[in-house]
Image 1 (cartoon, rainbow, N blue to C red):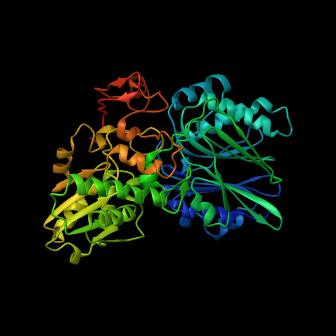
Image 2 (image 1 turned 90 degrees about the vertical axis):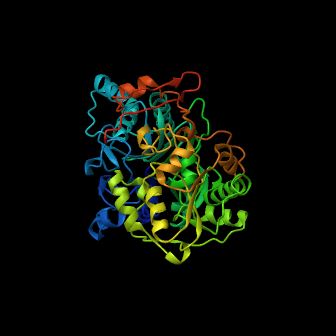
Image 3 (image 1 turned 180 degrees about the horizontal axis):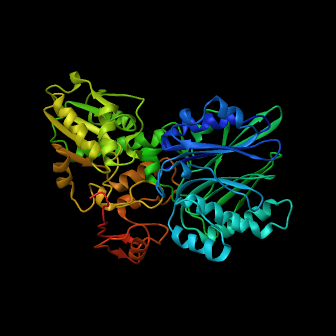
Length: 506
């Protein structure tokens, strides 16, 4: 999961790009990058590993001149954590193009081979985003005889891109001498929004991963970029848009609303905050109906995505809501850290118990989700050490049983604590006294109550159904999952029934 932003303005936009990336920092902590076009039509690029505040110092901001630019915060799901894989990426032919990408391509190996054999294009890194850039550049080269690309030329190139690549992608790109291009995959898996503001009678535009980036920089929300849609904003500030996919469908990722997106964002006409409150309502009703035998003294959220959910649950089951954990806000999000050891260490640095809320109490802990179980087990241990009598845990998301191939770092099934296990076994492994999961139908209904027009979500981590219909045994065996064993795919629904992937860490 990464964050992208692009701005076409009539005043210097380096500070606005920086500000947008800081509020998208929750989407990626590994690396950050900004690229602008200066008055002489040259790219000015700064990117490196680290947080936004560490990558961009005063000298870098002064260097990043121009009224048009794109930015990226990286959370690696393909390739590695090398600084060379920080984005945006750049190619000089045709025209000069930079690109930043949120998501993950599922046919990247096939695309690499195609680029080498048919276009003699060399890809320098392991990143699928650089592959995507080269595919886009290849399609734009159809029009390299034109000194000026028209909007129709760009949209034709994106139409060809959609026909070649598969997976999840929300893209911002910049073309020297032309402007900014943004497009979203035909399934709408990863989010992308468009905003505008008026400055001295000129209209400036921004595209970004989440609406919060618009809010905090003074841009007005215009629309969600539709699945398959492309946006082109030229250097004169003219906006063009076109549907470039043949059969687009809106299947936004459920996990955006459960965990990744900020609560003050609105994605695909769904308020993330309101969705989480509704998740709490659904889960609270389940607890009050099916788990009324539990003697609960207090409801405590595991900060901080679950706080709104926990507050609603406490209201539904009529129990006190308390802040039992104090969060160190200078530690990053543990889910998107690389490696279990890093996550274990970070939990200790991130959370401390308020012992008064645990001593001699039966506590119901609320978390947004349980992925690997590493954090859950540690937090339950902390609650017991703080004096809790019984520790119950409820998850606002269903059991995460299957790997994700669309931009979330859950690629190996055996890392997932719910893979191949029933709830009772998971409960024993994390050493809880009771474990409660949200039902998938309830989670979907919670979001559809916000936007009834979305009939299907990308739910593969919960149900193993991959909407791109290209994740099967052949994919697992021929990509970066060599050593897989015991896999089974339902060919009619592309549903993983018993996925047991080789875990390299073991």
